[in-house]
Image 1: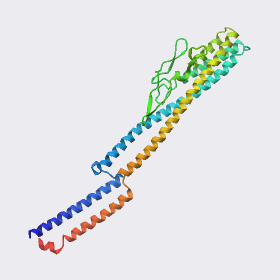
Image 2 (image 1 turned 135 degrees about the vertical axis):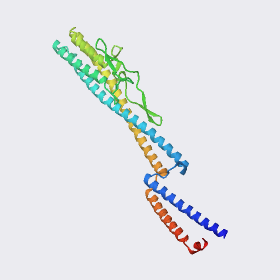
Image 3 (image 1 turned 45 degrees about the vertical axis):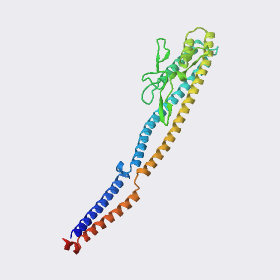
Image 4 (image 1 turned 180 degrees about the vertical axis):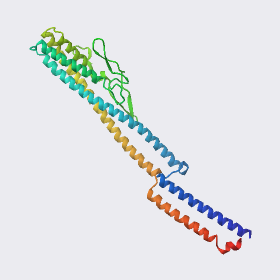
Length: 309
C-alpha cells in the first residue's frame, strides 16, 4: 500500500510540475509578444545580455556623436553663408576701389564712394559678429560674446579666443565647428604688416574723405585693391576649408548611420522576438498545457484512484 501511495504522490507532483512549467513557458512567450524582446532577464542568456548592454552603450554614444555632428553642421553652414555675404561685400569694395583709383573723380564723387565704403564696413562688422546655433559668437572661438569690438578710432578689434574647440564625431574622429575671425579676415598687407579686410575698407574710406588730393586718393585706392584681393583670396581659402569640413561630417554621418543599422540588426537577432515564431510556439504551448490539464483531470478521476483512497 505504501508503494501505491508513493506512486500516487509522484503522479500528482509530476503533473503539477509539468503544468507549472508549461504555464511558465506560456507566460514567457506572452511577455515576449508584448515587449518584442526575447530576453526578459539577464539570467536567461548572460552572454547575449552582455552583448545587448554593449550595443545599448554604443547607441547612447552614437546619439551624442549625432548631436555633435548636427551642431557642427549647423555652425559650419552658418559660417559658409556668412562668409559668402562677406565675400560679396569685399567684391563690392573692390569695385568701389577701382572707381576711386580714377584720377578724373571729383571730391564729391570720392565722398560718395567713401560713404558706401562706410556702409560696407558696418555690414562686415555685423557679419563678423554673427551668432552660431547656440547664440554665441560664430567667429569668436569659444567666446560667448562678440568676436569683434570697435576701438576708440572705430577700428574693429578681435576679442574672441585663439581657437575653436573640436567636436567628437565617434571612432576617434572630430571636426572643428567653425573658424575664428582672424583665420579668414586677417592677412599680410601690401606694406608687409598684418591687417584685415575691415581695416582695409576703413583706411580707404578715410583716405577718400581726407581731401588730401587726387594723387593720394588714387594711390590709396590702388593699394587697397591689392589688399582687398589678398583678403578675398584668404576668405575663399577659408570657404574651401568649411566646405571640406561639411563633407567630412556627411561622410562620418553616413558611416554612423550604417553602423547603427548593423547594431539594430544584431540587437534584433540577439534579443528580438520573432513574432510569427513566438506566436506559433505560444499556441503550441497553450495547446499542450490544455491537453495536460485535461489529461490530469481525467487520470486523477479513474476508478483505480478512487479505490486507492
